[in-house]
Each structure stands twice: as C-alpha cells, then as structure tokens.
Length: 83
Image 1 (spheres, rainbow, N blue to C red):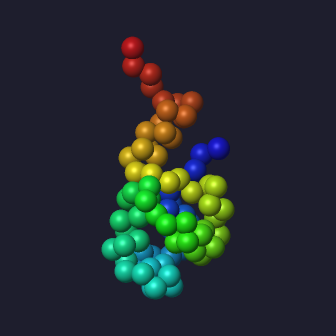
Image 2 (cartoon, rainbow, N blue to C red; image 1 turned 120 degrees about the vertical axis):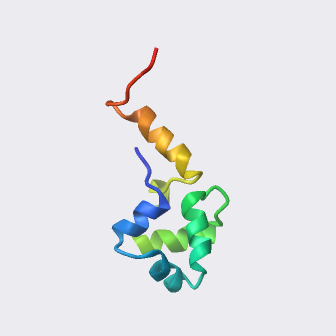
Image 3 (cartoon, rainbow, N blue to C red; image 1 turned 90 degrees about the vertical axis):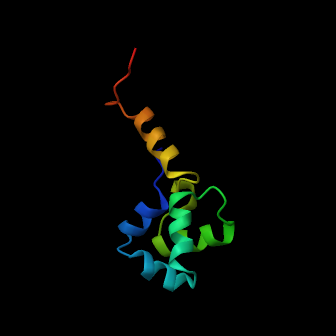
C-alpha cells in the first residue's frame, strides 16, 4: 500500500491550506509545517485531518515529505536502478 501525504489528502479534498486550517481552527503555517514533516503530529490533530479529508489515518504518510518521495520511488516498478 502506498500512503499519501497530508498535502495530497488536502488537495484531493478540494481545500486550500487556509481553508483547511480555518476549519480546524489552527494557523495555516502550522498546517503547512505538518504537510512538510508530519512525524511529530499529535494523534488528535491527525484524526481531525483524517475526518476532514475523508482519508483513513492508515493511508496517511507520517514523516518528512522527502522520505515519502524516496519511498514511492523505491516501490515504483519504473524506478531506475543504478549499478
């Protein structure tokens, strides 16, 4: 299973950063920080985001977005392996 980032979940839900932050009553910069690195997000906020974006928490990648990109590239059947 490939997980999706918080940013992808938000965009798929049709919400802007400021809209989602406003609904959750948090600052948009806080949400932006968690979209870049969600490794230290609280479970309560993660659950609220999961409900808002209508994505199960198990499908949301927790960590640094660059780690997610690397993970996706490693799992891709189209990735190029260098000798």
